[in-house]
Structure formats: C-alpha cells, structure tokens
Length: 414
Ligand SMILES: Cc1cc2nc3c(=O)[nH]c(=O)nc-3n(C[C@H](O)[C@H](O)[C@H](O)COP(=O)(O)OP(=O)(O)OC[C@H]3O[C@@H](n4cnc5c(N)ncnc54)[C@H](O)[C@@H]3O)c2cc1C
Image 1 (spheres, rainbow, N blue to C red):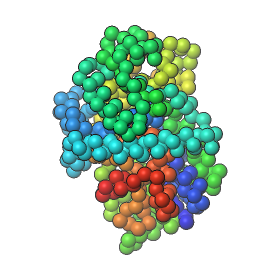
Image 2 (cartoon, helix red, strand yellow):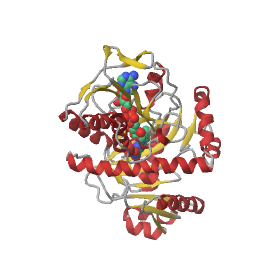
Image 3 (tube, rainbow, N blue to C red):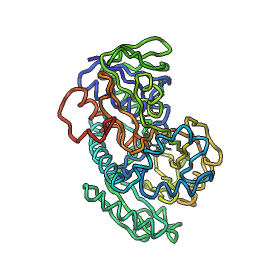
Image 4 (cartoon, helix red, strand yellow):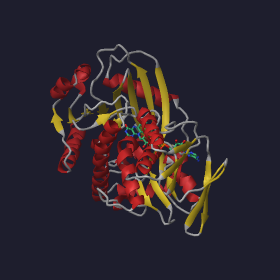
C-alpha cells in the first residue's frame, strides 16, 4: 500500500518508520524544509509515563479561573481566545470530573508504557543518538497539599505497574545534590526511576533517517491546503505544489490537524496549548542536575540535554499564535533560578510551540469515518513520550494486525 503521512514532526516521522518497517510505500509531506521544526523542535525532552495524568483534572478549572489574565501565571487563558475554544472548553470541563480524569489517565498511561518500551527497542535497533538520559524523573513539591495529591497520583501509577518512590526533602537532595540550595523550600518529592529524557528533535532526525533507509520518501516545503474527498474516500492531498495521491492517508499535523481535517469533513477536538522553553548552555558546569527535575508549583521542568539545560513549561491558551512573549520567556528564567539558583549564566535560546491538546488528554489514533483516512495526532504535552507507541499502534491498525493494547480510548469518538 502507498501511505501518505501528513506531517513530519516526531509523530509523523515515527509513523513513517513503522509503516516502512511493515513494508508499505511511504511518502511524508511537510511545509518545513526538514523534519521536527515545529512543536517537536525544543520541547521539555521528557519521556515520561509518570506524567500521563490528564490536564483535565478536578482542580484545573479553579486554577484557570484564579490565574485568568495574569501574564505570569503557569496556566493562562487569554480572553481573546475564548470564542474560538468554546466547544473544546466545554468538553475539557466535562473531562475534569474525577472518574473521567482517572479513565483518561489510565488510558494514556497504557500507551505511554508501551511507547517507552518501543522507544528503547528502536534506540537500540537503529542505534539512535539523541542525548538519551535513562536516569528517571524527580517531581518536586513545595507545599503539603500538593505533596499529598502527588502521593495519591503516585498510587494510581503504582497500580498500573509504574515504580514511584515517595521522598522526604532530605532524601530528594541525597538523590540529586544539585537541589541542595533549595532544600528548605521543598515539602517532598516523588522519584520515577523508569522515566527517561532526551532531545526529541535529534530523535526525530534519527528516526526519519531510519525511515528513509527503509524506503520512506520525505517531501519538504509542501504546504498542505486540504483533502480532495470523493464520497467516503480521500482521492488526494491538495498541496501548494499540486495533488499527492496514495491509497491511505495519515493525518499527523499536530495542532494544525483540525484545519486540514475540516476539508475532509472531520471535526477534530484539538486546541493549541502554547508552551515555552529556554535552552541554556551549560558546558563545563559541574554543579548541574543529573536527573531531570519537574517542579509541580511552577509547572516547569529542567532537563539536562547534552551540554545544555532545557527548561520547559507553562501553558497559554491563546489560539494559533506561537510568537515569543517576553514576559513568559523571562518567567522560565525565573523558574530555572527557583530550581537551580546557581544556574550557569551562559547563552539562552528561547522557543515557543503549540501542544496539540484534546479535551481528554488522550491522543487520537486510528480510523476516521472517511475509509482511507487515519489519525495520529492530538498528543498534547506528551507527543515525544507517546510517539513510538502511537506510531506502532497505528501501523498495526492500518495493517489489520492484533494490537498490544486497547485502541478504543484513542478512537475519534472514544
Ligand atoms: C513547551 C513544550 C514542552 C513540551 N515538553 C514535552 C516533554 O517533555 N515530553 C513530551 O513527551 N512532550 C512534550 N511536549 C509535547 C510535544 O512536543 C508534542 O506533543 C509533539 O511535538 C507533537 O508532535 P507532532 O508531530 O504531533 O506535531 P509537530 O511536531 O508540530 O509536527 C506537525 C508537523 O506538521 C507540519 N504542518 C502543520 N501544518 C501543515 C500544513 N498545512 N502543511 C504542511 N505541513 C504542515 C509542521 O511543519 C510539523 O512539522 C512539549 C510541548 C511544548 C510546547
């Protein structure tokens, strides 16, 4: 079968690999001149099943209301974005109910665990190099209430087979001495030893290379305008350079999937949740963390990536605007200082990207009502974590093979 994959981010490139591995002819289309140049470019770098808990959680609506209009809030809803996200917002609120949160979290976790196993297999089989760091993730908490809710979340993860160690502040410092300067500000921590980290962009380049070696063809600088739908089938993808035809099509355009999906008659519940990162040169700094650290209160994480520190986080609902906001960029530097007060004063590169967020937090993977159109999109804050598992799952669905986990939670109407 000739499969046309729309999008060459971490999800599209990994999908191309699995499809080529399964023996399909694969063409990948992207408007950029190379792979991974949009949301997969400078994310937090965490491969983290332990962060599978959906953002649509019982406490989230209160936080959003409290922070409404505050430019330096960890989670910011811009009022101008409201008209464009009403329907999505109502669905998001419905998913904040406790039982929905639990079901969403469990479904995403099952995919994340399968994904990490796949990522390890791929890394070894294809000899991929992406500053991988298999040292786990340390989540920090600065007050007793958040420590208590983290302990409850850790119990859910443990029930699903994830190892989680509840640590007192002193134990967290013993594990990661770089945190010693903030010892008196911590209430405790949870250590997830099976999480990993690495540079998602380097991985995307590596997996695209491996896909090419298996015959996949990447067509860059192809801006996609929509689909040519004939009855219940897609006849072609319409690009600025003309139509591209295949037997089967996979929509993997991240936050931009709904726009293109609309031309095929699909209404995809995905909204862009903007986030920021800074990458700080840390070559020669020997006081840096060995383990990535996520600070719950700041909604930010610091990840050692090669000779740099990547600080990523914050959430802003502001529509399709990925421009850099100076105040929010400064906030990440303040967050870094709040976690590692002695951070290296090297060069800092700023970046912003749009997480393709569904109201449930579950990605959309599988068939659509259009017979030869499939989805692999909507991975929100976890696209790097979920990429290998989602790509494998979709390749098996397309091939009609047995599936390693239940795919229903990821179906369009699921
Ligand atoms: C600040 C931040 C931190 C994050 N941290 C983490 C983390 O630590 N761990 C984790 O797992 N995830 C993290 N994420 C989420 C992760 O980065 C995303 O889920 C993931 O990159 C989405 O990948 P994608 O391939 O679906 O989308 P993208 O990478 O955006 O790829 C979509 C592709 O489609 C192309 N495209 C779009 N529209 C068109 C069009 N009309 N025509 C042609 N091409 C088009 C784009 O050029 C792009 O290459 C973070 C995200 C952000 C913003």
